[in-house]
Length: 111
Length: 115
Image 1 (spheres, chains in turn blue, cyan):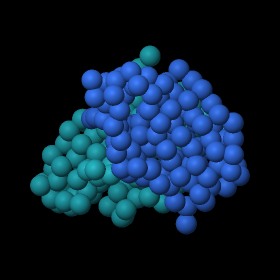
Image 2 (cartoon, chains in turn yellow, red):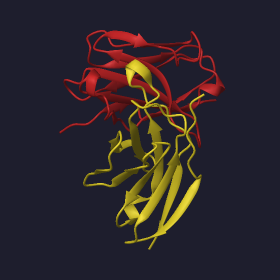
Image 3 (tube, helix red, strand yellow):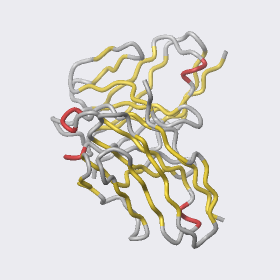
Image 4 (tube, chains in turn blue, orange):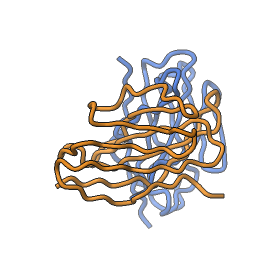
């Protein structure tokens, strides 16, 4: 069965980089890797996605291992607003593109 | 622009009552998803619409749950004879293109409490 593993929680200090790891050892060659985050009392929001190459956008960077069995979401300078649950979601959703969330990583950011 | 909106934001129902939860997706978005999020858990998929067609309802937990999107825009999730285990946040998400549905836009959710 498809399985994704993320640490339950992590802590960071404000304005420091944060590396959020994810293991997805059963991912197939054509499955994208998506990251979403959920701030308190809000719906999830898209962060970034990638297939093989590392990806950057205004929110974060995504580093994908060469064997694609793991990936790391990188927040270059954490702010208090980045405190959220971060979900790593390999595209196991099939034809409908439904998202299969796990329990994610709760990121706490200290001032 | 306007994002996904959901109403009501909070709903308290007595066990056995029927409830209807509304989702207004972003205008023009083809895909619409419903998810259920229990306390302390990640969201779980319930059902998917492409325009007015319900293409996947594999996540609906029982025949008490019913969803519709008759004109391909607004969607309603109905729960009949609510039970305590139905207490959760119900999230709606929309996406512009089913071939490019990498980014789903979520509403704030409806928190349902069944007493």
